[in-house]
Amino acid sequence: MASSDVGDKPMVLTSHVDELFAYPQIFVPVMEKYFQVVWWEDFEKDMERYARHIQGVLVNGGLPKVTAELLDTLPNLRIISTLSVGMDHLDLQLLKSRGIKVSSVPDVSSDCVADWGMTLLTAAARRLPEAIKSATDTTTPFNYNILGKKITGSTLGIVGLGRIGYGIAERALGFKMKVLYFDIMRQPEREAALGLEFHSCLDQLLPNCDFIIIVVPLTPQTHGMMGREQFKLMKPSAIFINIARAPVVHQDQLVEALQNKTIQAAVLDVTSPEPLPPDHPLLHMPNVIITPHMGANSLESRRGVVEAGCESCTAAIRGGAIPREVVLK
Ligand SMILES: O=C(O)[C@H](O)CO
Image (cartoon, rainbow, N blue to C red; front, side):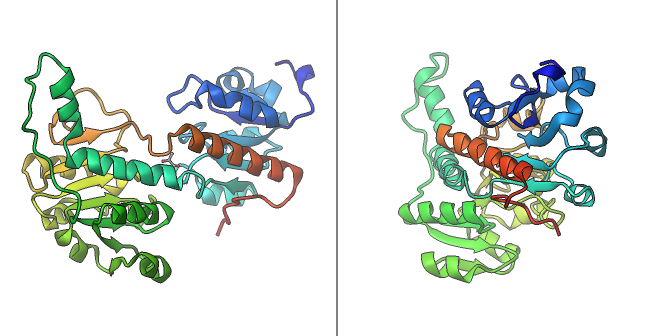
């Protein structure tokens, strides 16, 4: 795209389609309906040409990285629109100090992520990866005796009763589970609506749970909140599930807890790093399921997220009220 090609649509920058956290190609036309899109790779090659035209950045999976250096190159930037619920990859204070608006998508993919939380819970309870391997891998004995853990009637502890945590509670009740939750803020309405049991202290919740699922945002308060001491409080039969952010958990201490059989199993949709290096112990444990950070990955959810991000970005560029604006404190 030459500078003479700068068209009528506003120009936005986003991560390249070939990057790890790329938009699947099918979403490119959605973005191009709204914007003239500059891919990160082209931008890096030809910053001079694009920088002054760019008014928005669509951030996907933390890319492109929004650094002070990047902001310095974009004199007409109005908004950073992150296509995620989590905002831990953004320096909100920096953006505030530069007067740049921020939007996220807190509500678009909650159902999809809650579905995923229950999918992982059931997969771990019934040892699904092992079962599939036994039935389909002809080098593995066909095993009629893979014994799982009963879900109906068991107790689930939800750590974080935001939209996703609430969605998981709704689904768990369908499985006739008893649902306890911990949150730094008690949620009386949500609690009453579903008959949940609140625990003000995480350490008191943990010993009562057959399954524990983490759905808190990554903040300074939640960073490292699950470690050796918390694993020791869990039942030896507990299954631990993290669909939030990896740094909420001391990963090395989780490995230790699994190796020592302090807990029975873990399911991680998020790891540090992503992906894990091939020799990482978590990749070689029979009692661990790892998935590639895909809670929000349904076609419908991802399309909704891209549409919502584009709408916020457009509103900011036009100077109107921004849907899903993140109020910077
Ligand atoms: O925060 C989210 O929306 C997902 O984890 C994708 O980054």
